[in-house]
Structures are given as structure tokens and as C-alpha cells.
Length: 87
Image (cartoon, rainbow, N blue to C red):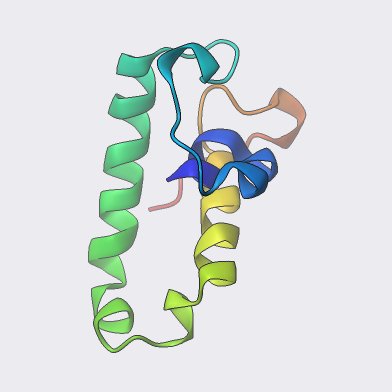
């Protein structure tokens, strides 16, 4: 969740609580919730078999990397790094 919101910068924030006033520039609580929750829900449901069997996908570094990749699909991602949503 944190790396999805903040991208690579979220790696250093992964053990912190995120407060509303610390959200990325150009985003607000409603936008983050409306964007991030469906993206991660789709990712989790699409890979539930791997998550349930505790495959390599569940390694913290892999999950963080997925969050960073998904971050690039958010509207507040740096425009030069933005990509189309993952389906």
C-alpha cells in the first residue's frame, strides 16, 4: 500500500503511519482511496493462488516492488514515469 502511494520513496516509509497531510502532491484522501484500493484489490484477486500458497510473490521485497510498479499507474505519479494501469 505505501509503495503504491509513494513509489520508490515509500520504501523508507513502510513502517510508518501515513497521515492525510503527507499524501503525495496533487492527491487527496478520496483520490488515493478511489485509485489505490481497486488497483490492489485486482492485483490481489488476480494472484490469490500465489498469495495463498505463500509463493515468492509474498516476499516483502517482491510486494514492495509490485507497489512501486503499480504506483506508476496512479494519477499523481511523476508524468515522465507514468504508465497505463495494470489489469
